[in-house]
Length: 475
Ligand code: P53
Image 1 (cartoon, rainbow, N blue to C red):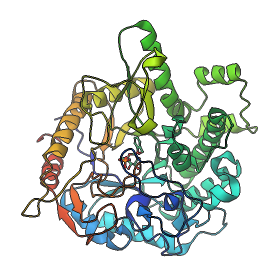
Image 2: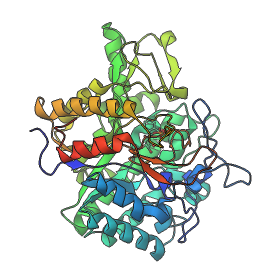
Image 3: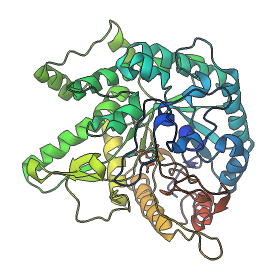
Image 4: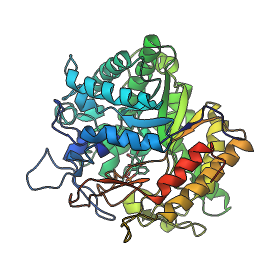
């Protein structure tokens, strides 16, 4: 037996990708509401506000806002012990800078969490998952602005107070390290509501933005623990191991430096101080990151309780710059790994990388870990009987869970839980497509928004149910 009795088997989603109801219950416009649908190789467009005639897939999502009871019942049928979702900031503070929260929004999550508890399902909640109020972008420039710290802490505190008896597991910012990738506008906008200006040093801005977020996150941790000392508040990073292409010593350094770009965010949130490799970079480049007196104390006091991360893929890099290519639509500059396959969207599939990552994180931080996203996007159509036979998804999860098991059983990794991404089909964050499907549950809707929105169980639904039932023994 490898997984503890209380191991949190579940699944993960984000409010903006499934709720819909973008103008209901007093909700304000979020950054996700001004992003159009793209597709593989065609980036989502970030429009200046909501424009007529554009396709904004998050406006409707899969209408979870109205159908959540049916959906939670389906997840419960699979035996979910936990369910990760986010609280849409714009339901609680529609513009972000109000002093009083929106009661209707708070009530929605009360009902949602009650519904989960009915089935003994533990809510695992992200406070900010790519859905900050758009007003904070237009009026304040997003997280460039120090004022965002107070707005976020107010939002976090309101949620902690309101749900202190309903939610124990929290995360502050989803995949806070995505913004390390400066090539694509998507990352800075979804993480931080930042649109880079022509000619500015993106990296310097990124560090300033990150500093504000670190302070906000640490303050939230401090406030949260005052409200309920039992709260477990984590950081959340996208963890993509970067391998050296060869054993050329300089390739090791290239891979190490690439990983540091990612680790940086967790290093601050876990250890409560800036790592030397970043301080040296600031010195070298002459970056003057604005900080206030007391920030360092806040960072060291507000360290996280656990380390949550998403795992989808690994990457590879080289020290020979001319060999580097734009991969994944510019999301990463590196080299292709000839030893592994890729998904239809060009995401490398690497189960062993998950075990590797779990080990690295365990050794680096000695904190409990939680895998809060993992999965594969697939094109799917029902067969003649209306069933989705998603054997490729089952194979993906079999391989990844088997590696996760080794990490726990053989390597002694302290793992709290496992939440596959998108247990029910939802809108893709990266492309805005509906047809990049992750679910155990199929949702009848296409990229143009046509479909009945009916839910049906895929083959993997029954498979994952069995996995949970056997506590990960029967793969
Ligand atoms: P989609 C990039 C790289 C790794 C994870 O992604 C990422 C992204 C952004 O696309 O995002 C996370 O929907 C994110 C989820 C997202 C999921 O991965 O682009 O936390 O919101 O849906 C899958 O296929």
